Image 1 (cartoon, one colour):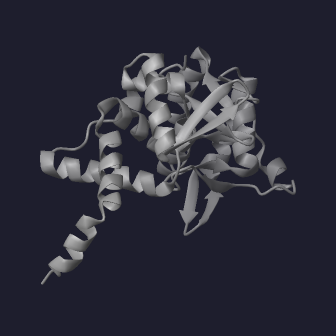
Image 2: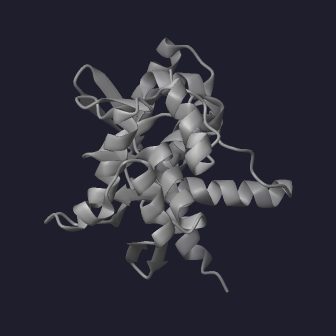
Length: 245
C-alpha cells in the first residue's frame, strides 16, 4: 500500500513540482518539441536548421532556444561564426524517447517520422570522419548490407566491404599498415547510434570529397552533399537523401 504521508510530503515541497511542471511546459510547445527531437536524432544542429524543422521564423526559433538553454535542457556551442545546439544530457534523450513510446501506445499507431526528416539532410564531422545523421545512416547501411561484421563491441570489414572501398579508391591493405586504428564504431551524442571511425572512416570522407560528392568546412565541422553526392550515395549505399542547403 502506498504511504500517502510520503506523497503529500513531496507535494508540499513545491520546488519539485514546479521543476517538473516547468520541464513539461517547455516540452509542451510543438515548436520546441520538434527542436528537441531534432537534437535527439543529431549531435548538433544550427539555429537556422532548427527553425526550418520547427517551421518557424529564425527570430522565433532564437527565442525558443534561449528558453531551452536557460532551462538546462540544451547546450549552445559556438564554432567560429556559427552556433550549434545539442541536448545537455543523454537522460534528456531518454526522456524524449519515453514520451514517444508512450504517445504511440496511447494513439495506437507508430510515431510519425521526426520533423528533421522533412528538411535537407546535413552531416557533421567528428574529427576527420562523418558523424550525425549521414554518418549513422552510412554505418547502418554497412551493417545491413554485410559490408562489416559485428561481434560484441568489435567490428570487422568483410570481403564485400573491402570490394566497395576499392571501388571508391580506398586501399584497405594500405590502411591496415598504418599505426592508426583501422576500423571502429564511434558513438554519436545520444550513445544510441554509431558512425564509422578510424582509418576507414577518414578514408571514406576523403573519397567523398575527392569525387566532389561532399564539400567540408573543417572550421565549422560541417559537410554538405553535392548533387553528385546525392546520386552517388543513392547508387552506392541505397540512401534516399535530400541535398543540403
